[in-house]
Length: 213
Image 1: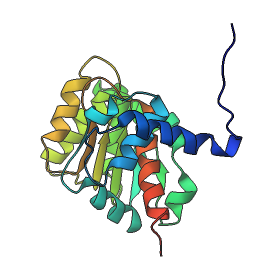
Image 2: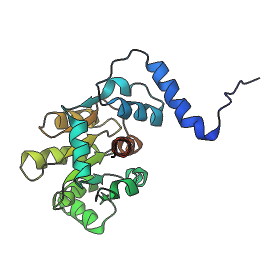
Image 3: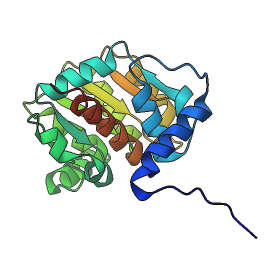
Image 4: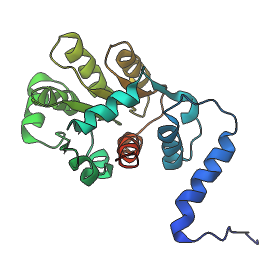
């Protein structure tokens, strides 16, 4: 079987990919100011459903960018998401990336309380005396705990990126976050993942870096 390949230079692959994404989106309406985030999620996943299922609270992108510029840190629920976030770019604004899932005290707390490590890691994050952005791509229990902490007045995140993937309580946990007054970017439904969580963080950082000065 003869396969026709596009003649694209290595350094041009990403640009060509975004051209193709833009072409396939056609006239699909996107919220002004969110286009790059949506396109980067599509680029990461090759899934055009993100053009419809990504939900943004009012001025979420502007608020997130302002928080990052002011030194906000990012808390994730997986080492994979932490590894995927551009830590050097975040550090330029004074921020760090945290994932407490592998910490011994988190494992102990989860066992003692009969919860998941994701739940316990959110409790640990709530003790940080820093402005925080949460990027949740795997554990719906992390979103549920964030909702509880917000409702209890123990946490006031700068932004919650709620994109866990899966089936059990995934849809419901995302709806809980959308019911708070906290800025959010949520992938409604079952889709998402650690790669999407990292992708959204990097898109925000990319937007800042390309508008510096």
